[in-house]
Image 1 (cartoon, rainbow, N blue to C red):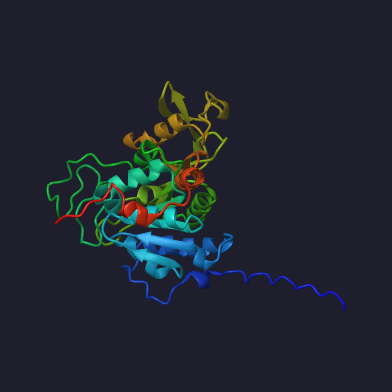
Image 2: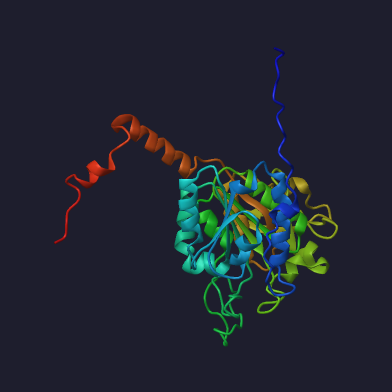
Length: 344
């Protein structure tokens, strides 16, 4: 009998449409969320996963509609609990590619505690935080990222709280990948989502997102063509920090303090500038805190990307070690043992 070999059938290449669900997208016309959704749907077909190997988890807020619009597994949880739910999903199903969609209110207010613990544990989960500096779904109250003096429905005399810097918060929680991008910069947004996906560990991506109803223009200084070049510096690993319409300005360190210098007069050159290093956590904090100085440009890109064992990998190793010593275990024996009791 002649030998026959089965030909392997290559899986069909996924497209943007494969990730579009049958649900009507219901955000306000002009909302920045549309761009974020569109860029993620464009990028996901690049990754080596089937649709059933993804899971999107959200809490409450405009951003939390995200799982409805992605044709993958999804769960719309309760307010602030997306990262806790995602942690359970990832530990129970380590092979799933788990994404969390959250907002500055959902993720940093009621969900702040869950957020920092998920990041510090370094679960291989990707968090995209839609930051519009306002509570949009509940119609315009101030959020943990609203700026001092901001007039909102719940702060008619102006915000007096010191706002969170989401990037600094993630760095302080020891996330192993921290980045910032913008809804109105599609190519950069795509690249950051791509980098987050390829990172093995907790990834935190802050996205400046315009709420055109309750906080319109909050980030226009950084997103609009007329002002963007003068107010944004893009972070590229191994390259000096240069910005400006003609790339005529740079950032240097004066001790630990970043300052703007001109490259026009010849006093300074690219050799005098701060060179970005994604592996340097101290530098990442310095860059994140540039937000405090309005004379400095706003950094966009990857602040930090380092390798560290993930929580789920260590958990699996710990369970395997325990089983090798004590066997598979017996639930009924545990229930019948000395560690349980009956309440009469």
